[in-house]
Length: 375
Image (cartoon, rainbow, N blue to C red; front, side, top):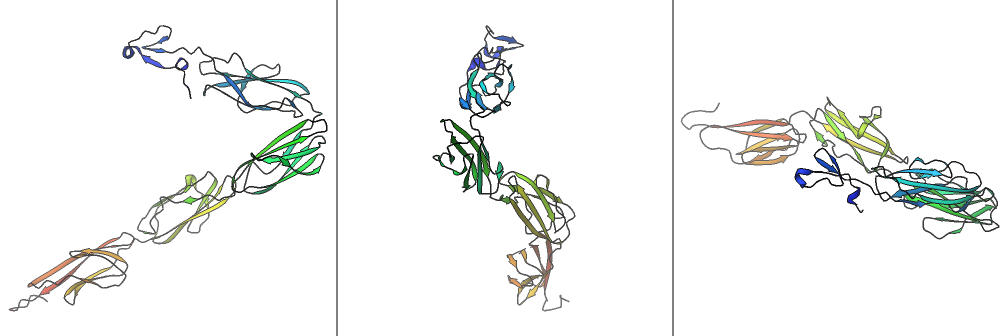
């Protein structure tokens, strides 16, 4: 993109730049650059110079990205318009379309872009009936109808070469097409009448037969001890609707693909997200977890000259000389029992899969040979 400085409405503080405004407009302690140049206007797509169509559509642009536009058809006054622009129904005869850009400074293009054409309603006009603008159906049959008898119909999708359509009569034809893979498609049709006039028409549509891909980036751990949960889902494409169902309950709108719940009880839980994309493809995502707020039950005691620990569930246990995960009811022995006279103890900290923490203390006593210390 080329930026012309004379078109910018920039302000420079005079004290910093050390310049006088000169031909610029002084505003406060700065200068605003005058924009005296005019924008250019370009018509991108037009109607044929001879057509049987009673309406015409034009697209246009300017060399100034922020420009607005004024359009006029025939002798009508210029009025604000946007691209694309479609005329009202036209009568037979010569017509002219004019469009001019207006930049942000208010300068108008002094030489509007123009296009002249002739409408002859006695010439054939083509109408194409096809799938919805956005559809999930890959295979489709498009029907072409001509307002007057024609000698032939030729069709093509995209940039393919035109080839004969399936003619049904002198005023109708069909074109069968299967979209693979998904994407945007456009059927081009041309029909020649007996005097050599070629009528044209285009029909565009988008095929999306692929279901959305859903993820749950903030799903809770499969086993946790949370009393409150917040689950956020994400989709790889825009969605038309989304509902959530908690623990098999009634579905409700899932605003912003987020679901929150407090006072979550212990037990197995699930959240099911059901969605449709803009084309109507359905998808579902299930997040399941178990809430466990109960601490593990640990037992620590001497056994065969070593310390031993057990738990009623899978637990990670840590103590002096111990750092291991034990299964439910597994006996884990480690170290060597103290041999010094007196009472001895060891503390074991256990964390279950949900994150609940429990501590347990094991005791061991060694008697004095000259007298009993241990009970």
